[in-house]
Image (cartoon, one colour):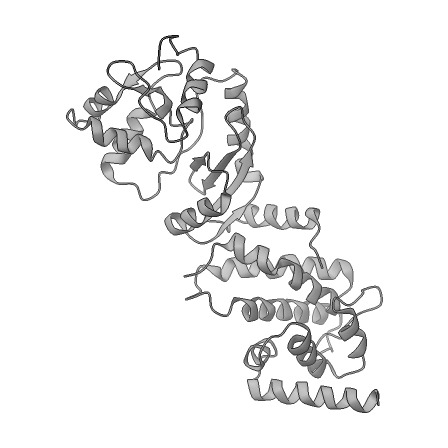
Length: 148
Length: 190
């Protein structure tokens, strides 16, 4: 049984804003945040159950962010994190992962910052759980090398 | 990161403006306590004295659909009319009503109830009779007790055949207050 949208919204609004603030400048992040929950609302009634709501809304947020970045810079495949005037939500992790390739960065932050499992991160990245695990571990390896 | 109240409100307005909600709700202060007020796309569907919105929200999600969200805009008209009623500037509500999945008898009784004028009393028996079931006074009592939109559907104007107030889902104090507001309460009513 799905929870009423109000409960779903209250549960996830803050962390989704944090996530998007890590990806986009402030104004763009706030617009993307609203678009994320409007899209969620449009699709909400057709969900079959309420089991993977958190991964689901992260997936939507991620796609909205990608759309936004593509609109402004058509060549970019994935958003880079922490653009000039935005402070990353998970400040430490955001700073630490700044130089990672975008996919690895998203995988590391969602795994260790937001505790999503690899299948869920795979959904966000529109690939598989295996690919998400590989991206995260190669990101972590890279970080170890850099911070040795 | 906490969503600011202006950003939060902007989203709630946008969600309502785009017509994406099954039910919008809000809370309103009144002389009979905080009211939970809710509307579907078709009309006002709930007023409750229950101070715990969560329970109401769950109930509405089951009856009207899961897209239930607090949003001020869709309730502005209902809130304004309620304020006017409590300020004694309004004796009739001009609001569309959505009874949702109510049974036929319930619907018939509530439609009759809606026509009981401001400041006048009727009885459970009279209401049963006008709904075509003269022996169903007790069933009418049950419908009153479960009235989804008290105040606007004026179940407080329904009393026993001997003039006693009988009962009120929101408590007899509220029934008394509403009736004296309307000037309908005799001093010896209990």
